[in-house]
Length: 256
Image (cartoon, rainbow, N blue to C red; front, side, top):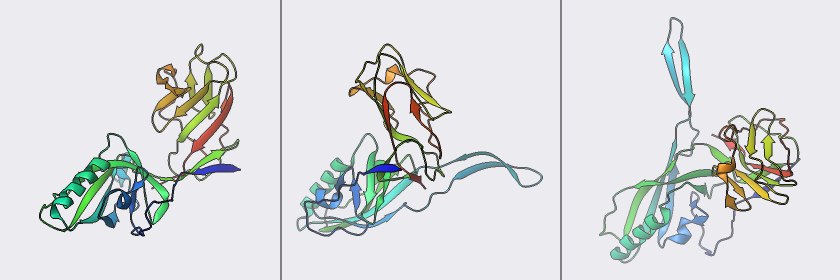
């Protein structure tokens, strides 16, 4: 019923065993990237609770809104070196590696089937006169949801356990004719305007990055303004279709 791609690359250059809660940040284990670095503990991966806004009435309350708050992963780690000056060098290298201007994929050694998206957001002050330093760093996840590391590719009908809002990772279409492209799930549609597409063009609707690529070139401005690009959602038993070409849909399972 489904094909899937396992996006986890488990091969390592180092033979040194990883700590149980070691963090893979943007494809690299920090233990392999930073000399003397070792993960000690991770918090923030627990089940996240919705925030409910309500107004008291005569009997109980009326709920006015519900939202999922962001998530912060707190990593407790240790860096050690026989030279205290090198400790500071290693910390600079750690920050250089962690700093990003966009979210990156993150997973942990004891939970390699669960993917988070976030970026480095803060750290403890680091003393410069020690051989061993224990500290904390924060990873801010604006999107608090957890995703499967497997990317599922349904053959025809969407089937699955969709308890939380699930959007496609991407939709890829091989164009067959000189015409516009409309992809629909029966309730919502995404349309790339006519007069732009030609046979054998490859269109990638990338929901994670918020882009439309045509033959690898960013053509997000070709989206029709009426498209449901930001709220295109997958549900069980949906039939996805397109009116121009051969389509492949990819998505990850979502949990909290």
